[in-house]
Structure formats: structure tokens, C-alpha cells
Amino acid sequence: MVIAMEDKCQDGFEETPALLIFLRKSEEELVARMALVWLPPFSSSSIPQPTLFFFNRGRRGRRSAAAFTPQAPHPHLNCFCSHNNNEAPYSLAASSSSLREICCGRVPETILQRAEEIGFVRPTHVQQRSLPTLLSGRDCILHAQTGSGKTLAYLLVILSAIDVQQSAVQALVVVPSRELGMQVTKVARMLATRSMEFGMEQRSYTVMALLDGGMLKRHKIWFKAEPPQIVVATIDSLCQMIEKQDLKLDSLRVLVIDEVDFLFNSSKQVHSLRKLLTSYSAADRRQTIFSSASIPQHKHFVHDCIQQKWTKRDVVHIHLHPVEPMPSRLCHIFVTCKKEERLQTLLSLLQQDIPKTGIIFVNEQSQKSIMAGNPPPAAWIMEFLRTSSTEFSEIFLLEEGMSINARTLSLSEARQGRSLLVATDLASRGVDLPETTHIYNFDLPRTAIEYLHRAGRTGRRPFSDEMCTVTNLIAPEERFVLQRYENELMFECKEFVLHGAQEPRSC
Image (cartoon, rainbow, N blue to C red; front, top):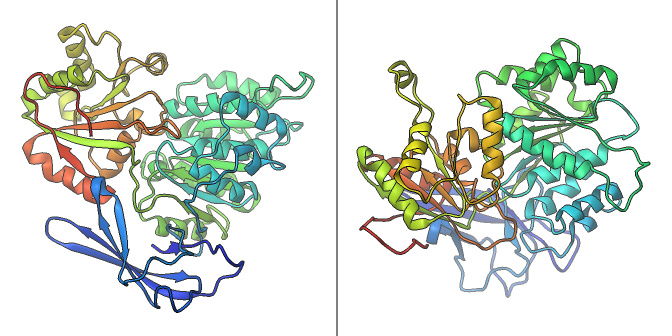
């Protein structure tokens, strides 16, 4: 971790070393991590060289910084961010630039006008930081919190790179699930629709969804008649079309891999993904964009991108909020109960919270449970809630065993708001339900990364200060697992004890 600074007095920087020490306290140890940073020059009246900055965990896992000197912090020091030779410095200082001002001259006016009609006017931090780099044509790894606006950033780049007069696949977005693919396709089509201020004579962009469970025969006819310019695809359906030579990538300009860490960690999909990155298209003939909220060992991943030729050598890693990966507007709570009491505890919490919209996450059914003939846990939780209280009539299910049409209908209904969605981790990656205020982990996720993505389904309304809640139902022996997630993701989870009827919880 190094520091990025903004010199307010001069254009150039002189390199002056300082030492940063990151402190994190767990039950048994104090972990210190050090990195060399560069500060702009300063006078003898300011902090002497070198300077030690100590970072300690504060309330809800936030970091506080203090210089080990009696003087005030350096006036030129603007913010902290992860940075190395393939990373760009970033300032968290609020920008007054609008999305139009950032994109003007590089994104077509029709697209900017349409974005404003939809409501995309003020850029999020990730858009403010990444769009200048992306629109310059550089390969990029977008590494930012869930709900931070990464999808809009890469779609604006795609729509700016396409030649609308050419009938060929020029942009490809690869996603891990049908649900995320449908969501990305919807936003792309909304942006690609002609603005009301522009005449109908202008040719429009065409967007195709090539997703698992789709009608590939119909897609083959479409590709032969008039290939779409933008394809949003799951990796299996995509490779099937490429290998049968129904889809050609000769004109590919932009390749986006969304939820890239999930795809690389999937034993079923990683082989096809590697072929797409190196065999089906070449990195030096396209702009490559990787996107995710979680990229473990990201420096090693950047190295692999260059060495394996998945990207060009000058790929930029844009990493926002490296110290605090969890969105700050979330309140984390845990309730301890026996496993046989968990359903009743969940019901009591729901009756107390009365969530506007909530998601109840359960783990996938084990193979042993399936062989024993037990019903899927998500299904019996939904049935229990429906029969136990009339307050929760709008309850929907989302799990792997459902048909494509049933999964689509459940997500569509859940997006209407005022409902509960009982789901497996199928709903945890990229699915945008902006009205969600409460997350309930009926089963504790198996990894910290899964926890991050589940929690990221709430607190997704841009520029909102509304606090949202993540509640974990755990057995006493699972407390140490949750503590490990707290340490890894830098957040604090408070215990809540149920004592009959109570006022709604608040953080």
C-alpha cells in the first residue's frame, strides 16, 4: 500500500520518502504492514522527514491516521490509495465535474443525452477515477466496492468505441451468471436507445444477450443476418458459438470480464476464459477491462495479466477503498441461536425490522442432503415464512434448481420493492436490487469474499446516506468464523440479543 498525493502548489513532484505502518489488532496479534511512499517537498516548518503514520481500526472498522510528530499533517497530502507501477494515483476529494464534463468529446452526444434522461448525471468515485483512463483506450482492472458504478463506466467506454455503421461484434461483456447478464443487457439497451432529441434516421446500437438457457438457434440466425455490435454472454454459451464458428471476434474492440475473480476461481469456466483471452482474440488488438469488487492478491493478478498476455503491458489497476473494502453505510449485526431455533429467530427479526425490501441468503444444498431426499433449504424457509405470518405475502425464491423463466420472474418481482427474496449465492454477484435495505445471512457464507458480495446487495443507492443492515444468524461455535471475516474485511459486527417484542434495531 502506498500513498497518492495531489500537489496544490506546483505541477511537478520531488520524491521524498516516508514510511507508512498499518496496524490491525486481532485477538492474539498486532499486524504491521509497511510500505514506502512519496511525499511532495515541504518546508522545515512542516512535518520533518521521514514521517511515520499510524493507522488504527476505529468504529465499524474504519481507519484513523496520526502522524508521529507534533506538527499538523502535511498540507499537500490529499488521500491514501493502493498504487504501484500499474496503478494510477487517485484523489478522494469531491469533484464538481458532471458525467458529461468527464466524457464530453469522447462519448457520443446521443449516449450522453440518453444517460442524463435515465438519471446518470453525477459521477460516482469509480466513474470519476476510471473514465479518463478507460476512454483513453488503456487496458484496465476496475477494483472497487459493490454498487460503486463499475457497470456504467465500462458501458460508456463500449458505446464510445463502437462504429455504429459496422455490422460486426465489436464489444463483448462476459458475465458469470444469467441474472447478471440480463441486468447488464438491460442497462446497455437503455443507454443505446435513441434520445428523444435525436431523429429516428440515426442508426442505433444493437445489443444481444447470449446467456445460458437461451435459444442459441435463434441467435445463430441473428448472427448470420446482421451481427450485433455488443454481446453480453456467459462463458459457456459464448465458447459454444465461437467453436461452431457462428460468432466471429475479428472486429472485437473492447472485451469486458465482469466478476473476473469469480470466473477465474471457477474450475468449470476458467479453461474457457483463458482460451477467450489468448486464443479467440489477442490482447494487442483490443481494449481489455476486468471488473470486480474482490480481487484477492491483486498485485499477483496484475502480474499474471501481463505475463499471460491477457492484457497489454501498460494495464492500469484502479483500486478504490483498498483500506475499507466494505461499503461504509452498512450496519453489521449478529444474533446467536441454536440451529433448531434459527427459523423462529429469523421470523422475529423480520417482524421487528419490517424491511422495505430484504434478501435472505442461504447456502446451497449439500449433495448429502440432496441424496437424503431433503427439500432445498431456500424453499422450506420461504414456505415457513408464508405460513407463519400474513405480513410476508410477497416472498420470492431464487436458486440454481429453478427454471430459467422462474428465476427471471422472481428477480423481476423482487425489483418492484416491498418484498423478500430467499436466495442462494446466485443473487450475490452483481445483481442490482437498489431498494434493498436488509440482508439476512440465514447461513454464514463460506468465505469472506462471499460475505462481501452478499453484503454488497444493499446500500447500493448512489449518493444516499441511508443506513442499511446486514444481520447474521450464527451458532455459538461460528462466532470465530465471523470474527475472521471482520478482520479480513475491516468491519465491526455487533451482537444483538432478542428479548421478545422490541423497537426496530438501529446502528
